[in-house]
Image 1: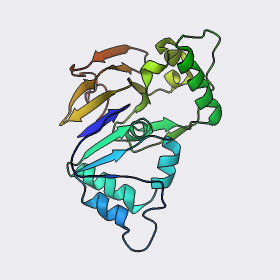
Image 2: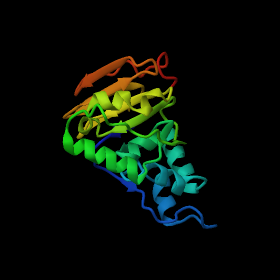
Image 3: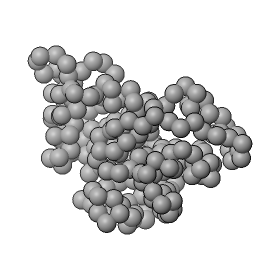
Image 4: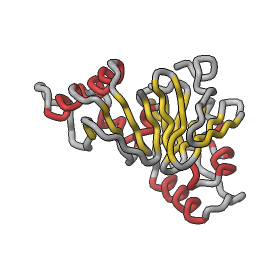
Amino acid sequence: MTGLGSAWAWPGRGCCLSRSPIGREPTVPPNVRALLGADWIYLGGGYPHVGMRILAGTPALEAILDRYAHGALLAGASAGAMMVCAHSWVITPELRAEFERLARSGEADPAAELAAPSFIDCLGLIPHALCFPHLNLIPTALWLQSPLSSSGLWMIGVDEQTALTNTGGHWETLGRGSVTLVSPAAQTWRYAAGQTVPTLTPERIAI
């Protein structure tokens, strides 16, 4: 099961990743042992490019993907949700400051121009897609006209306190907000809580 969220939590036995240098010692460290025994794994917020740099080439990443392949629940919130998709982008201080300014204003700024970000490879569990968390904090019109919309990828926008879940190929929106999908051809779908998401199918995105 996969979950993308802007703020979400699941009970049960699990493992939270830290920013400590895990998985690079010759012996299996405690963090990796915890991952190998986890029923669910939570990727938290922060910066996706930092998270991927920490995990790249480590036994910790191998353990995460192995547990996911064997049915463990993998949940990502904010930057963690971004890491679950095929690609994400580098959040520079300038880009973060501009997003925060737009979130505070709550209005679309016709003069606003978001700089084109540098894209990075992520876990690829949702191919051909990138995730935009906290979508309802940024005017949708600005999001759609940003350089992210010309990436050639599907964009998955997740509102605050909302999750997009995948259970055996059945995608559903849960929580207080909505999930917005934008195709590479700029077609847009919006799904409220409780609605299934039929556009995330092998015919649309090769899962």
